[in-house]
Image (cartoon, rainbow, N blue to C red):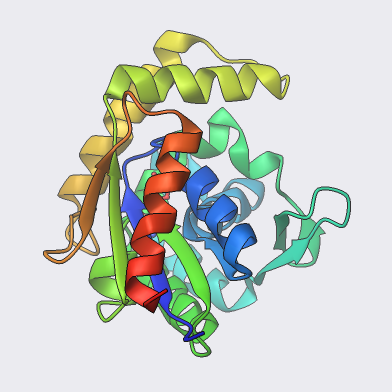
Length: 229
Ligand code: DC
């Protein structure tokens, strides 16, 4: 069967990562979480004191970029890819509120985006890829065969992220999560470089009132239409 590129873009905590990862598992594709890449760069900046309060040291970050190596390795127990920063598993750290509070600032830096987009394009050379993010269908793979734009009500997204954090034992307050989601929506949609935007040929999925099973059923139908099964 022909291999394609599936681009899934959408708002923070819209559930696109869960859908993208599950779809990749079902159809035997590689899954890439581009948000994890921006989070890993942010973690590196925090660890190396390149972000002080809300200020970023742009020149230092630019110089540090060649030394930031991001990779994904499948966890043999869960079967899921985990994020590595310079050889260290940082899957848990990159999901913290501290990283979430700074990631939009780092993701708005044009040279950070250019470096990560180039890495992402390389990952898609052989196709057979499900990639999720904000600019996958518009900038990374404008020629992707299947593009999905995922959205949901901000309160519903905040509730999902809050429950996820609590389940993982990460301290959080619902209000803080909701504020963070709204701020990220604003920064993600208004930045100059690679803003979150629906590609003109993307299919919209508003999953505010959908179960994960309903979303997966819908997604599989779209995939099958594209590969002609
Ligand atoms: O999907 P996520 O919430 O893990 O993404 C974390 C942040 O990274 C989010 O605030 C937006 C940014 N991001 C981006 O700018 N471009 C991408 N392709 C993916 C994520």
